[in-house]
Length: 243
Image (tube, rainbow, N blue to C red; front, side, top):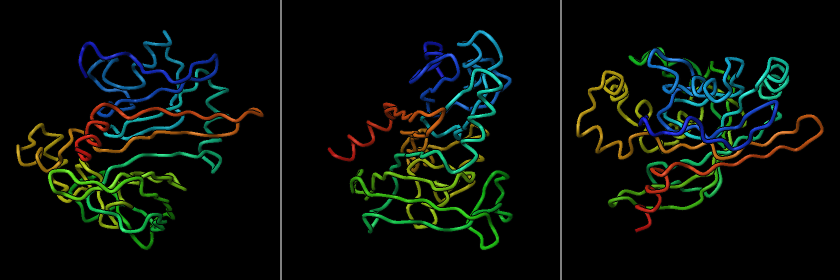
């Protein structure tokens, strides 16, 4: 992140919790590179104390909405809510290929990919945890002659890398995905700072085209709904596909 990057892009701020629009490329958890290098570090800078607690988390590469409780009581209540089925999460994704069906449900269990050289990689496996993802085609596009599809995605469960794995499983990996986009070693090269020019050309985007755009839930007798736009790179990708 650049030195001029804002501490946080705030969507909602009240005495009990924050909702922020996390940029792609920012990890949620603390790192050794200072407070600005992680979302929780930036939250602590904004709050002026270390009481902020992440209620949901996003992959480093994924942008979008994250909820942060400002105290332990709120963290406990919202944590239970988010751990259940009472929260609707909506994402936008741009994937490779033209998705044939206008609507589709991907129902495939997920578990550790024991054959992978990438330690954090999961996969579809029959003995995995149940996972379901609903997708709706928003627009079928082309980028430099390659077919692509803009999707609205609703995960009905919250497994690690669920959306990324499910979309790759049906043959439509997310644009820019370094683990599930076809060559998992690309992720290792990324971590080592050794991405090649061919890697970057294949990825197209510096970060995967996945954005957590909307959250909705009922809490304390009130309906809460939040939305946030994707970052400039996501929007530029859509514009490039339409030109």
